[in-house]
Image 1 (cartoon, rainbow, N blue to C red):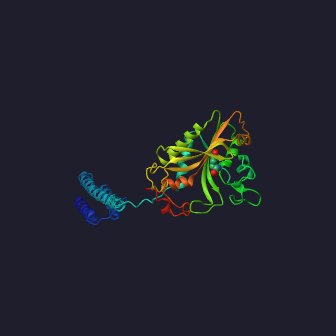
Image 2 (image 1 turned 90 degrees about the vertical axis):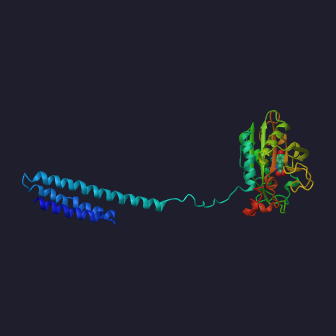
Image 3 (image 1 turned 90 degrees about the horizontal axis):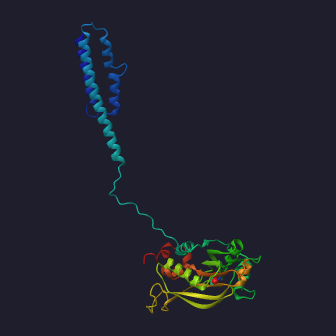
Length: 347
Ligand code: DAH
């Protein structure tokens, strides 16, 4: 009987050895495991045969079967583990990232020059406690002109300068209309900055029918031209990245008294280059108008000019963007040619 068992064990061993030979797959190994050690497997059958042996034969036969079982299970397990490891390595090789490969290029982008300058200005103003407000581009005559003390016969109201709608409304010609809107809405004291598009009937290389301004307005007690200068110089430093001298010239706007126009020192040559492309050799760049708010404008805004004073300014952002980035054609700012728009970035 025990020789029968020994024979059977040899058969099983041959079966397992054939299964673990070179070229085994996980599937074939698992099939072999079921065929040998499964419920109906050959090894399980052998264990069952033990019961039929005599009590004398049983211990010896049991030992032999157990030893074979341990040996063949270990063989099969080792082969399965090897196969699993090989599968894992193959998957890792397939999914590996080659860190020496060049990276795919990042697309180059940037803000539009006008947007960049607008963000620079607003960042400075927000730091000084200004609130950014947006106003309507389609405006009434009242806010755009009348409330700013611009009399009916003023040339700015001319059809030549302003785009009117049939109903008497108009495309705002400046962001100054937000002065009285804001005073009526917020009262005094206030600090607002209003960036946005404005429109005029102009069209040549240095004028576009649509352009951008930032309006600034402070209404408070004890305001002076000194405050105005401080704000302006901080804004210029925010835009051009360095302190620039400013020059103030007496001017006239119906909504301010006194009125000033401001020039800043040429950020390129500081006046040292008679052939400078930016300042045309003058050493100065004109950037905007400003002044102490006219008492009539405060009154239109519901603010008592005996108690409060205001100062205001308006700057053209397109011109400043062109100066900063060395761009020469104002209308091309709005053509959408990205290489032109970004051409001044890397100077
Ligand atoms: N609104 C003026 C313009 O478009 C600019 C301006 C000048 C705005 C003086 C102001 C100011 O607030 O005080 O030309």
